[in-house]
Image 1 (cartoon, rainbow, N blue to C red):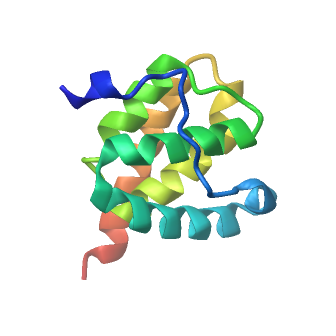
Image 2 (cartoon, rainbow, N blue to C red; image 1 turned 30 degrees about the vertical axis):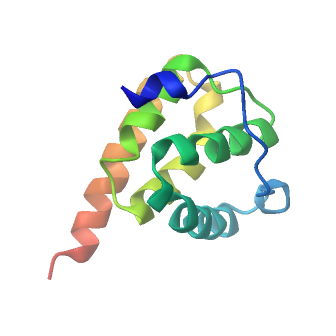
Length: 120
């Protein structure tokens, strides 16, 4: 699988700087959306270093279980759901006892909201 190519510890140099947006969930979500739109066509292995940088700039390491949840979600959800979920995840998951479970729940909830807003 391509997961083997992405080493957890090694974050490739990523230009994106999230620090100026960290104070505003809306601004950070907008910036994340722009960033994902740019990186997603290159595939999940290209997106993960960007997401890991967001975690680092928010002041935390991404644990391997969180990494797995985020990585597997990249193919599953539309970009607006990913952007919103990732921002909520980086802001609120660190205080949780099981951050990966919390993040999975966030993805599911954001997807439901997305589908609700799209249905006529």
